[in-house]
Length: 308
Image (cartoon, rainbow, N blue to C red; front, side, top):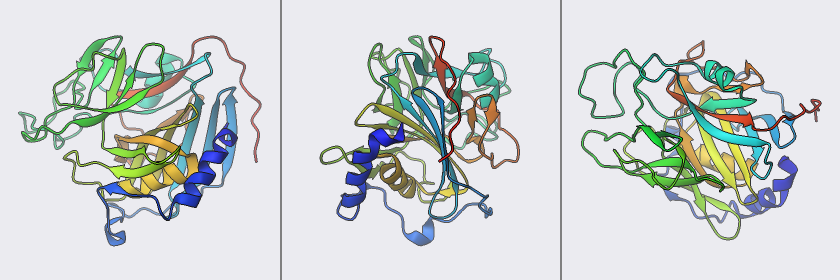
């Protein structure tokens, strides 16, 4: 699966020194872990889960363990879709619980939500409500369940992932309080990480969307697209990466031409075949608002695991 992107990866590596970086940049001293955390052992491995879906584990430059899924969007038997904690208006759920309910082969956590205190938004309350409250866009089957929130009155559009009917996923900024009528489903979060550059090579482009922690190393979850029709979902364990470093990592290792950040920190979770494969930084899986799940829309035969 990852071999299909080899030409893109080669081009990205050869052009890395001259590629234009736009948006937010960070000094190396800024990209330190918010909570010092020793990097875990992270032996390189690649495993095809089913035809069209591959899991990969690799280490980032600072020792953070990176877990990645590569989904071939041209394989009609597989579908990537957002799923929500159920029932709506109830408590949040772990990614594992949502993946199990959806019958997903694999899943990662999705957008932001009210956790502890409402620091991401101008929420009219000192603490979160007892119900699971989304702070990012979530649209399922054309119904808007939550929208990108307004941060302290600042109307930043926030990068979101949309799923048009019969077309590849798209990444675009969506204003606070708005739905996305052109798509059937969507998950918001942000900020943007990678934008198209020259040819089939992405460039680092971390946009200003009002968050303020772009230059802090934290566990991260991200989504990317390659020029040849692959979707890449990544979970980075502690100590984690700052966002420009995460963007560079996605370009150099997966050849993405578009990418966006999802909720991170203790929310970062990846589930593969009914098991959590990363190490959640809270010490246990966090209950979250939504997730991105890979499901089989027609029966698929599991692949025989192969180690490199």
